[in-house]
Length: 387
Image (spheres, rainbow, N blue to C red):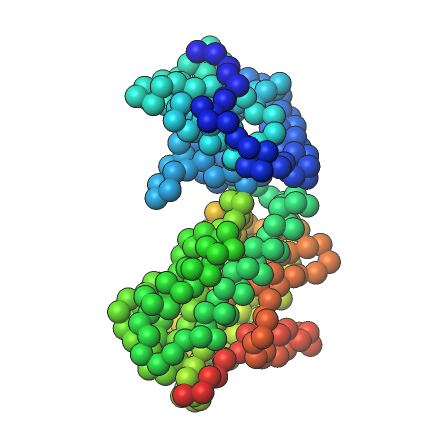
């Protein structure tokens, strides 16, 4: 087994060679140093990464999974003076040329018919190794790695903002073009197309027509046809990061009961967003939201569905739980997605030291102005189309 430079059998033209973003090179170098410091502090020789979220974090955006699979087809092995990719000969060219061009990675390969686990075993042999899985008697440091994924670097923050805009735009463009009689799955197909067109992977799509979510809060989409109103939500991924947005559209004026439910959900969302402040524990923020549910006489609604998530290299890095002591910090993203009856709202925010930024902003969309502690927050209202 040797370290090899990978050469494709067919020559690549200059127009096909991806250019390397110098910001990404710097970001990977900084993460390498972060890992080296961790290895030194814990008297370890190497770190083995196999989960997609940790690989995406360390490589600043590489997706080493095969289409349709959640598992990585490669492993990342990091020592104090090197970063290596362990993979089969089938995947080596694509990884080296496309996923990690010019980022200082070396590649170790085995034939496709030999298990990747054997290559991983060989790399770990005779070394004190930590990993994100605990395999091969390595030290499981998955929790420590989760904390390393925050705060976002400068490049990751820029990418989160770009991703949020793309997800919100796709949801809103889809909503503006719904028609009477379309099925939920037809609307979801249109949404998926718009996301993929801009390089965003649809990770979770929800299309809920005419109160579908009253009974099924985690409904995705089905064969039901749109008659009056529709809630459309998407979680999209790009460069390994995740963002989410939800919008509501109605053909003609929706029922007054639905309008009331929507505005109550917006109030919960605005409260959660406003109190997602640095150094606040999740349960402190949640208690503020819970009190609003109680104040507006819908105290049982929060029990029907989860309310929010911390987002990053996973769509749910951690959930907002009643007794969670996890703290918000600058360089962290959160998605508040409360629901009240048939209504569901949701947007992604980026928490900074002195402000909270809505990274799934409204385009050509009606806004509702919500007051929280004398602070006005504009959130997406119901878009009403001609019946």
